Image: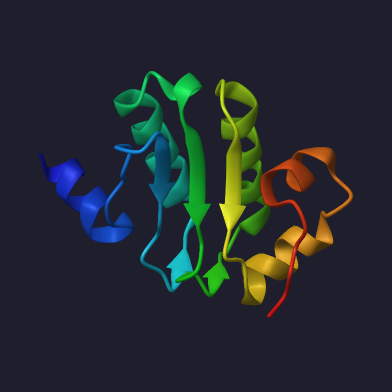
Amino acid sequence: MGADAHTAERWGSVDSTTGLLRVQPKGPTLAPEELGGLLGEVRRRHTDLASQEVVFDLSRVEMIGPQWTLALAFLIDFARHIATRCRVVSLHGQPAAVMELYRCNRDVASLVGRVANG
């Protein structure tokens, strides 16, 4: 119960009622270890991801740090190992710059589509 409360406090609600699993960190900083923990929690709770799309909404995140490459690796690994589409949306600031830096990587491109700074 403590872990569930911490997840809800830090990440907001995870809504899978429409077949869309939307995960939105509350920001303003996203630590890689938090992201890793959340991805594990999503895997445990939502075993039928094949029928859903997973969307990570980073609209409230200003910075991924301090090891942003680890956070990116976690997202790529998660997307590779689930049987559904996985996207990262609402990028701006440093998270958008991170994704733009790796825009030529096929895995990053499939996560974000076209990166837009702004």
